[in-house]
Length: 230
Image 1 (tube, rainbow, N blue to C red):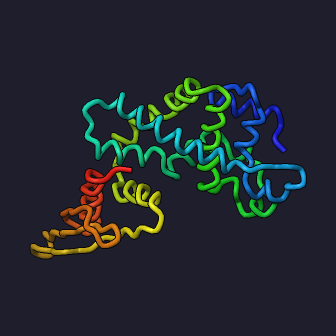
Image 2: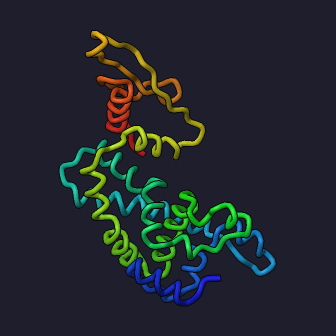
Image 3: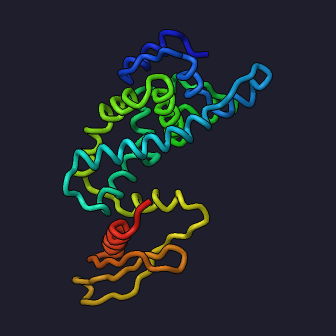
């Protein structure tokens, strides 16, 4: 069980105090715990996660739009994907020590669920929805601005993994197949140049050239991100 002290510690890290603490508890309730405690009327955080995902996407898009005037649409799409991907959200959740507050089933507990990125990321989205339901759009906007502004600059100025950013977008489109194909190479062995195209199902969505296959794939992914949007 989660203690009142743990709730207050988490609220302090979030920078938000709940009027209805049951919403925070719900956001921290994993399906494994709810399934083991159905007789007690426990409900998991999946519905909150669904809502939080939409709120986060819209708020981060707004943050990028207002904070990065002049940034092209393709780069905005890439940056949003990086900010709201599982890895990013799990990292943010870890900074709040969210894992120690989760309500998990016995099996998930033994399996290391408190440190599992997917569980942490889902709980983070659920908390965002809980803040929205508890305090409204102004409160959740303040929360996201506080915790994502610095991350926005960090992601923009860091070494961008365009392939990962593209994959995060494609994962939202169920049943789609993303793959890379070498279409040419030239130059002597010490000065090789590779040409790569990236395909979504059977449709080419980007092309790139690089001094290595990996560099060419990154260039192709960057090209694709400039052409597609979610």
